[in-house]
Length: 215
Length: 215
DNA sequence: CGCTTATACGGAACGATGTTCCGTTTATCA
DNA sequence: TGATAAACGGAACATCGTTCCGTATAAGCG
Image 1 (cartoon, helix red, strand yellow):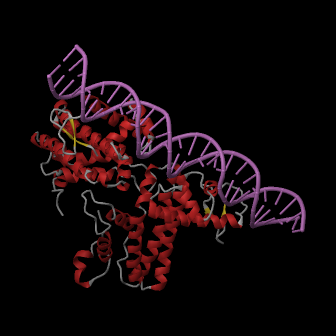
Image 2 (cartoon, chains in turn green, purple, brown, orange):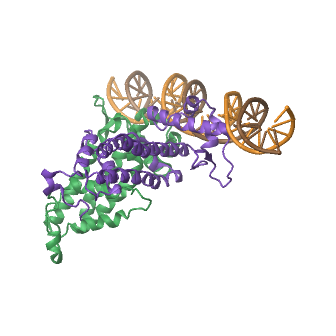
Image 3 (tube, rainbow over the protein chains, first blue to last red):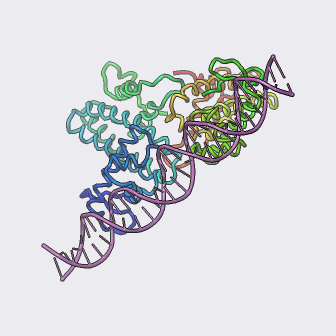
């Protein structure tokens, strides 16, 4: 894709070596496009017409293809944007709530993200080379975010200290997978149980006190 | 979809209550279409043009839409056809090989099925109500097939008797999932290890002899 | 502030594909 | 063999992805 880098001041630059910043209207249209694509994908699926995305963003179709030569580039941009939004919520929640409460809320936020973006993730396997960097980006954003929540909760004495973000993220994602039979999985409740299992509780130390990282 | 039932004599009937069998040319075109769609999907993906499928089957596009009003109906039909082919291979392998060998070979066959049909399965989550019966069909065909292999191997004294088909099928499918990092998973080797773990072996009874169904 | 230029925009135009429709063909059965 | 209902084929239409180029405008400069 043409645009990968966000400068520290928030301005966008092309990724092709030339360091000149994008023109102001280009930056505006770009962020409008990603937001519009996110909404349209959510309501009409990833195969939604390009014209509809362009129209909702108030731009012409040509503008889409200039910024995102392939459809997969636009999908990837939306995915990254949503990853950012979810990861950024971790620090916001930490500022607004107690550490344990913040962890609970962010976990549910993460569940919503996984469930909502399953459609994108599915087309992601079929997609070309535009998606190969996404799993790494996913981890690079979510692992530090979750780590900060775990650290805060552990420092407050609410949580055991040996929880590994990578394992937790994968475990929750697995819990959100659709089951092979027809029944929907109560993902939010299962995840709440999982997080509860990480807490210190005097009455259950004998059982829950074991290192979950064993074996 | 219009055609769901296969009579015991192999003839096809409409699923809409009317019991009159399909005309001979309709049956022929129908099976040609499913085979053609399978091949085209395999080479060009599930978004392959309908015209190409029709042409390779030697029929007009109208014929596709008469039998499969929606694209998802055709995908579902191909999926069921492939499930049948894989499940039927179980009895064929049992007739041609020793029980243990038959189990090994069928497991690898199943791995190939899972890997090859990931593309279909992905579009399956996004698809509409045409796909909702497929997971149940998947289980109804594969669980008895694997059970017969496990029974035969257990009767021959080659295998522990407490292996559950449902668990095994899910475990193998999980092993075939793409990893979150980029490296490909050596699925066939892992599955061979898994099946090996089910065997009786005098030298490792202390470890592998535990009930895997515990906990 | 006005001029120049590179950058970005919009939307018509083109080709490819999904889907429908109806005149024609063909299997079935009396 | 002839009547009839079922099925076929592919042209026709609608929609969508993608390209292209004349126009508009932001950025830099005197």
